[in-house]
Length: 368
Image 1 (cartoon, rainbow, N blue to C red):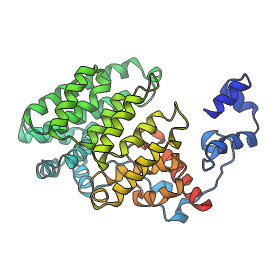
Image 2 (image 1 turned 90 degrees about the horizontal axis):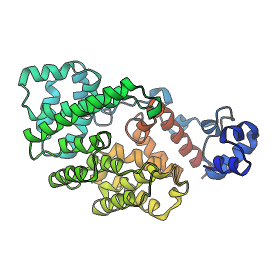
Image 3 (image 1 turned 90 degrees about the vertical axis):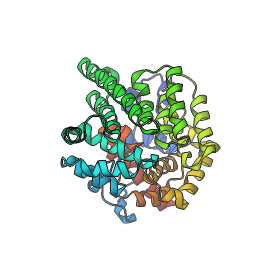
Image 4 (image 1 turned 30 degrees about the vertical axis):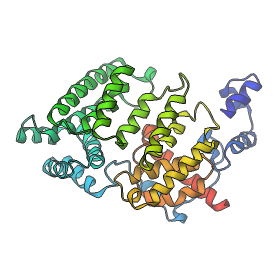
């Protein structure tokens, strides 16, 4: 945004401004906004500053990083590995044992859904063994179709997505909706298929009334459903097309209801940052970061199945808010885990985004 403003002041396009400006001028401008940013990651060709070797802070090297969603929770990693090896029984057993622990169930289903989208052979074997009416199979099937729809579409912008990709996405997401509705019938008390429907809402273009009905059904079963709240926030995002007041109001209400939902305010700021560069300086964002850090320091937060996800949001928020040095211990706890949001939103560049934020945190701790 700073570059856009400077380019406009000079009557140039951003591209022409970058080509005309000297390296020193661009570096100065970048560091006026955030002194911890590596200029080479903002403008290709600029010097690679600061040169940071994160292993000196005890962090694993970049080549060791993984975007495997299941890795942060060993029991989930184990059943996903078995599923990818065509053995569905550990997944079925874990889903049976964690029924009623809705946070764990959502995390298991999310990771298994990705495995099913990559290769549904093990899911077909499960169906052949138990029939189509198993409530655990049904919810994984629905979430797997959700994952498959987005994998068929790809993560590029609309104008870079082919007509065939759009068609495959639309057909598959409708199948996912039907499968999720079927799963709600097989397990009337389970919030998990309703969470899948919340996640599908934006892709299906639900109007406000339809979304509200799905959201009420989810909340009736689990008022503090973490994953459901995260994807509801994504549905509510105006994506730059309107005011963000409703988005922040939703996030702040949820965070006030439970510290387990404090991350939502950080996620809202992340959504808004491209449209309001000073959002990370606002007091409400720093209060949310403090609340999230306090939650992570508590027994409930540190042992939660969502602890890694909370650490990702806290690390991203701290670096963005100018408190990068505080993120170093969080990156230490994350270790090789570069999975999940916000990093996965960068698509094929998820590991690069994670590495950039680690470097900024370490660089800031060096100068603190």
